[in-house]
Image (cartoon, rainbow, N blue to C red):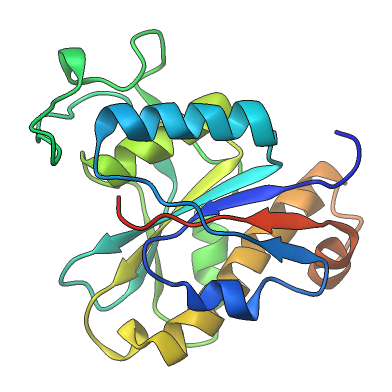
Amino acid sequence: MTGRETVVVTVIYLQGLESVGLGEQVDVSIKELPVSYVKTQQIIAEIWKTLKPKFVIHLGIARGSSVVMVEQTGKNRGYRDKDVCGFCPERHCCMETGPERLCSVVNMRAVSKQFQKAGIDVIYSGDAGRYLCDFAYYCSLYHGQGRAALIHLPTSGSLASADTLVPLLQTLIQTMLAQHVQSQHAGMMTADSAADKLKYSLTSSKDI
């Protein structure tokens, strides 16, 4: 990719992330995804086609949860719950030609362990559910060849506070991006230098 490298982040409600950013070299913009299978699929495909992002991060809400969950895989089938339009995907799947599951290139277990060592409840998860969050995640993993992540955010407990969650989310995203860059460069760069060398564009989602 030539010129500015971009990372697209679909965010639920944390517009505070637009203010704090991801570093001096990071451009932040907002993109909202509707609670619609068809529109979500179209928007994500267009994001990958037109913006050609280096990485896509989706944020979803884990209702009733008090921890942050980092999702390793997206599932292709089992989408039986209707969206706000009363629609269910044909054959209950995301991509008919796609594999049953796709994994992020980021090692989410390693990310989780790094934050847990610091006493922060960032939990590894291998099942993102079967609704719009998982559906959108699989779409990005499919179009981006694994260059995507899904973070489920809490709705209760101390981490649900915007004052706590926004800076945590900022660090968490930077950690994922740094790991991705390090893997591409055979571990030759530190997390800080990786963040310094790349410029990103950040978009967010209203609700998935």
